[in-house]
Image 1 (cartoon, rainbow, N blue to C red):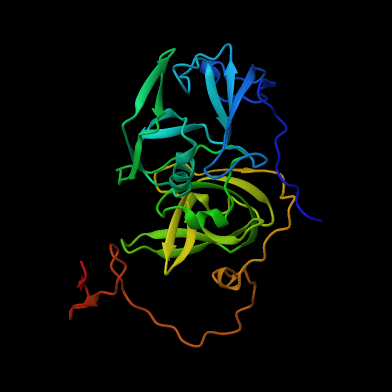
Image 2 (cartoon, one colour):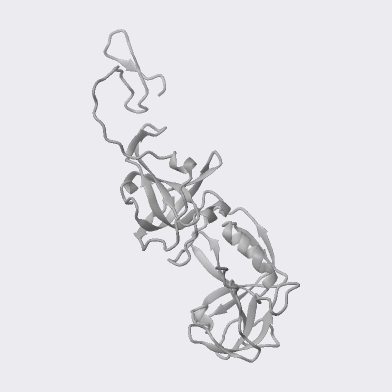
Length: 315
């Protein structure tokens, strides 16, 4: 069966009502009514093509208008409202009235790319500041000294395949099912202390990815269960992406209902990265050795001739 084509049945002068909260501080809340004034189409598009936005006049709208000559009017589209991180702990609401800038903003949003906005204006309503992105606003990628924090909701969690478009070393949130999980292993760090490590294979309807759980996060997830996972570090090694529990941020997880779609097949490359727990019986020891090691770096030490003092060449 072919998919349904998106369509809009709307005319100028029609009465419309919002069915969700877009910007409650300025009157764009669930149940707000208004009048459709005009439609905004992409370049070289016209009816019956789908518009990018509908200009609606709301009598109780208190925010910035699309034009000084047309008060109380705002374009309603998919990405009219956004949030910008101005520093590590501050979110600022931003509004873009230029449909031509939407693809560029979406590109930077998907890539978690920091940008500099030049030639913008600001609006303060009820002590809440909003950034207005105008027609002459320029958007340029930059490097900032803090990581992107994505406040995800249950309906906005990205797919695993979309992580390929995200810049590495970012914190991400995902919804995924635990396909397989290994036993906890103890490894020695390069600093000489022991670490607990556990590997998990996550899968959704698009692809699969490896997740490494460290220390206190080991044994927190259960095999074949579906979770909403927050604050995972996105890493890359030898061209392959994987996820890590964070060092400084709090790792959050919550069991949620399973996927309704068919799940993707776990790739052979990903599946080979983990080993399931295997039970066996030891029938003998072929070789054993004994040596003294440094209590600090865990490396082998050399015992002096008197047999009482050992010297660590590494420390």
